[in-house]
Image (cartoon, rainbow, N blue to C red; front, side, top):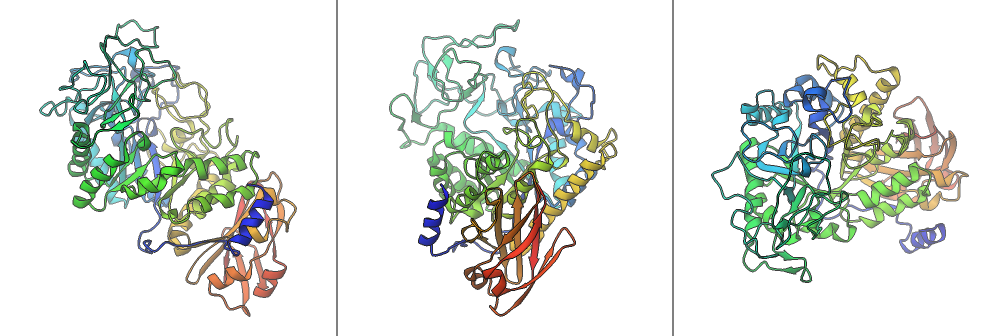
Length: 586
């Protein structure tokens, strides 16, 4: 949306720079600050990993590595939730004696395998255990440790697909997925999977020694209805059947509750009741019918009302539908992430940020803002901002702009660059989820003795971590950021300073707590002259005759003015390059 359109909208909205609180929101919900940990990499301190190495060569982080020191450091950073990624057993090339259906190398990506190719929904990944036979106990101990440090625990739920070698050794006493399927039918409401009758599966991986046999072929997890998926398909997984006939107009067959619904609901209940976790990050929710979510989440929340469900979501048209189905939090990837990344990279005008909150009005509390996760490229990588410093302005928005959750990926606060050539993943600016590896900055923070005090970090990395610590703790401890209102100042400032396309300014306020945040995405420090209109003062319930003192929360600067001056002329604030200022108004 261009400048003239924004100005027109500003008039039409009667100068409504304010993102209003919805009637069902309360001040008691709090702001979740989520730390995503890729568990197998997090505690791995091996500093000489080899390309495409085995678990014996490159080693792997263990559940026990996430000790009290680790959890204390996470809690002190201001995090409220930890999402442990890759906990449930998934297909890999590392086999153990207890496995009745070991994975075949032709249907595993990388040596460690994707954590989203689940091969036993009821089991802990054995790679993560010190004592494989006690792996569930080790996970329960991690959950208990996390709770002692005031951290709620989330794990992945992968509802759309499973590994091709799926078999639950942990629960061999219950009906296995696909055990009762009629494989002569491409689709049947009673089947757990989809089939391609009369055709044999052909793996796109041909450089492995072990033959893999699957006949009839099952449909791949990304809805690839072919017996010969490509390397770009999710060829290592098979699609679960929730009663949708994809090959016949996506016809829904829900009159008789599909068997898959019941099995997946029971899996969710198992993890809640067996391990005392607090929530789930649900993978690719849009590939599963919302009717299932409404039924399953309704069932679960009736019994466990405090369980949190966070959705990986990419279709904004479905945001409200999935919130209605029971999701508490949704990725705001295609809205917040894509726009803010574009601004950070210099490809998008900063004034476009105004459209972010407009598109999610009424559901702001449900949005999850982030700059990194396991799917996205690292902020400091050569593929994104190139340095951690260039991502600071974006992080200010991530922490302070939204009413919902803030999420960080482990190592973001250290400037982890993920520019290694690990194996299957390659040099792509992502911390590999397919290979046995360690992450450079994280490894040096953890330390060989797992003390988590950063003995090997350099001064810049220490400073960056402290910067993140200050930002996150303020965003969670202040009522203004925790559950207060947001007022967008761009509609009165778009033409008032030269570098408008690189600056974004807004207010956050609740009761007597009021903050002005100015983010500078530009490469040069600049003086921003920010006006605060009458409507904003009225919303903040400030007398128009008041004198105002503005102090830099993280600096020494203090600015004094009157409401009248701030409305007419504004305040000139020095804003550092690629960073910003947070001013408290009194």
